[in-house]
Image (cartoon, rainbow, N blue to C red; front, side):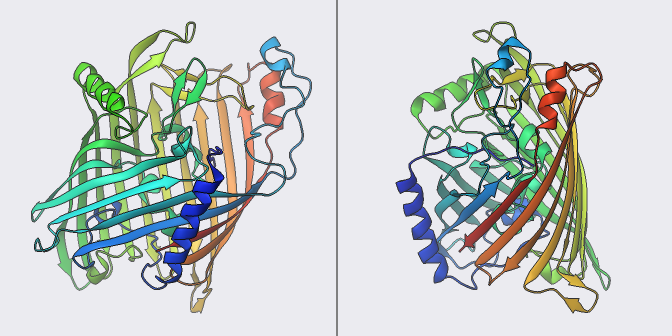
Length: 456
C-alpha cells in the first residue's frame, strides 16, 4: 500500500485540524460508519439531510514508520551509486513521525425550497499528502448535483471519478486501512511529471466535469431489493486542479479541445437485504461492479523529457463485495494501459511516465465486526492482501509488488475512529532485471501506522 507525503506549512495545517476537531467534538453522533454503499449516490446527494447549509470536514492524524528498514548498499549502476546508504521509500520515516495527513473543511447542503433536488458540496484541504504538494491548501471538492427526474441526476464541478470502489469510498469513515492499495495509488492517482520530477498536486481520484448517475430499483420483495447503479462522466482529464488559476483553466480547456474529454463509466448491481438501508453507508448488501476510464495524455519523452507525445490512457476494473452480519468482504481488480507512472525507489530518483506501459493489480480485504453472536464492538478486525504487477511481460522491467496488512479499528463513537495497521511488503523483479533491482527490492521493509480520524 502506498501514500505520498509532503511538508506544507505546519501552522496552516494544524490550525485547520484544530478547527475540525473543535467542530467534531460538538457533532458526536452526526456521522455513522460506512462500509458498503453506492458511493456515487452518497457523495453529494444529501439524502436524509435537512435543507440549508451545514459545515462538514475531517482530520486525519497519522503516526507512520518503517522501523526495521536498513540502508541499501552495493548499488553499481552510475545513476544509482549516489543512493548507496539510502533507505528504500525514504519518504516513510524510520521512527514514528506524527503528521496531519489530511485536514478538510467545507460546506454542503441543498437549496431551500427545492425538496433536495438541487444540492451542493465544497471543501478545501490541507495536510501532508500528494494532493497538497507544492500548494499547502487546495480546493478539493466543488460540485452541484441536480435531480432532473426519477432515474437521472446530473453533477457538475470537481468531484470523484466513478472508478474503483476503494477510490470512491468515503475515506475517513469507510477506509479499512491507513494507506491506499497499490493499484489505486499507482494506477488511479495521477501525478504530473516534468523532466523526471513529480510536481504540483496529484489528481487524487477527482476531475472536473459532468456526470449523469442514479440508482434504479429493479425489483423489491420479501427477500430484499435489487438496484442498478450507473454513472457516466465526461471530464477534463488532466493531473492538476482546474480551479487553482485562470491559466490552469485555459490549459485544461485547450487539452479538451485538442484531445477530447476523458470518459468514465461505472455499473453496480446490488442486492439489498433491507431496502430501508438503501441510502445508508453501512447497509447489508451483495454488490458487483464494472468500470472503465479512457482519455488522452501528453507524456514526456523517455529519451528527451523536454518533448511530449499524446498517448491513450485506459484504466478499467471490476469488483464485488458482501456485507452480512457484521462481516464485509471486498475484492477488486484493475488493469492499466498507457501513461503508467514508474517512480524511483529513492527520494530524488527520477520518475518516468511509460507511454506504452501496462500494469494490473487488485486487492482483497476482510473486515469483521461480529463473530456469530459475539459482537467485537468497539473493535473491528481487518485483513487485506493486494498486489501490483508493472510491465509483467518484460523480463527485465517487470516488477511485482505484494503486501499483506493486518489491522484493527477502534470506534470511540461516531466521530472518532482509531486505525492500527501493520503492513508487510514484498517486491519481486523480472528474471532478467539488473542486479541493482534485486538489491533495491530486498530493501523493502514492513510499515507500521496509526491514524486517528475525526469526522463531523
